[in-house]
Length: 245
Ligand code: UGY
Ligand code: MN
Image 1: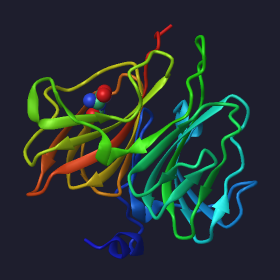
Image 2: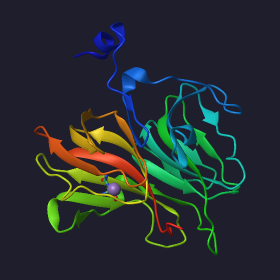
Image 3: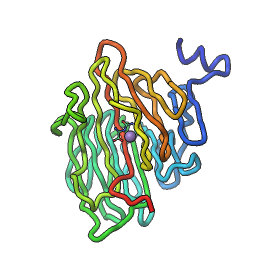
């Protein structure tokens, strides 16, 4: 069913529940943000939903330089179109990523036509704050999740307890699924990159496809099964290395 059909009759696949949300492209609201010129944002996840982080799709028709994050706020960016540049000299092409620690003097610029995913959260410092990290998904080795070779995880940030979030790419062969319904106190922000399948969130089952985003609140039962004939992949963040108390 084309998105225009859904919209024409006041329908959407988006579903906002108290502890989880599916955010689909036909319901995106593109807005501006103070300090960012010529930049459009679709904030899909925010603290107003109940999340402890914000996740936005960002679209830059013109080349821009982003303002710094607010004090104490960390950023993770994931390029989906065009290219981003950091003042460190690093250039992020499609599926390039960067973690920028809080209160950093590193600046982020986007080339004309770039699109990226922006995550922001209040960083939880424990000891030394980690340095900036950048890289490309193509260079990250995947590892099988719980021994299932049809389901791999690529971890974009180092396994270092100084990081309070993790950002991963999960890839599923057609027919592969999470081994069990996960329940954990950590929350997730997710963007489907390729393919699709069925996402179970709490007691709802949703068909999902590339471009869909999901917020999973703490403890929400969650499961994904990949459908179709091509692999499915998603970008997922998780507040991590944390005590529940
Ligand atoms: O890391 C995770 O918790 C991940 N396996 N969750 C998910 O894919 N919903
Ligand atoms: Mn999970």
